[in-house]
Length: 188
Image 1 (cartoon, rainbow, N blue to C red):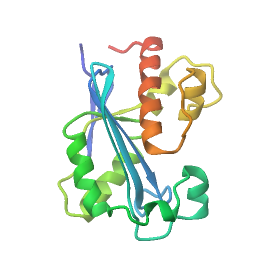
Image 2: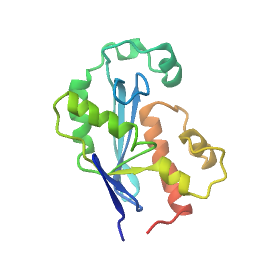
Image 3: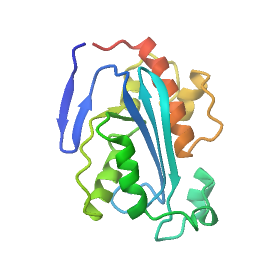
Image 4: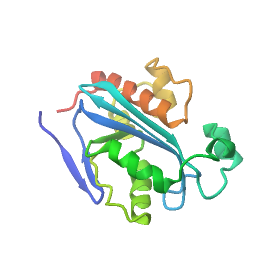
């Protein structure tokens, strides 16, 4: 398999089909990658195109979760009240991901940058994992859909996604959508 990889300052962008990877997703207090706090981390480890392990934890932020974020994610202040802090969670999350290629929907501009910023703030080693962004990939696929949102893709591919905007459900749904897209858009 020929691997096309583009350099970035936080890892490489993978531009070929992959069978071994970790799907990641975060839920956050807002969408500003520089200032948001993480309220949920999830990941699913995939080997030979099959999910083999899962990781998911709620995180207690320093600031309160807004009603808008609760309406999107379903995550309340009460749910995270007794959860561990990001200082406790992030090292465990990074250990679970390891050196895997990370796959995610809009991962290149959102999740990866949030993790990178948190690593810097917490004096952790830089987050340098290579990435495969399924949002970018979906834009290349011949799909007759109004947009490339994950919820739109799950509907298009009939992938169960009952708990959208919860990190673990999004990871699992994203994995199955990626498997379907690989059939439609071959890469070298």
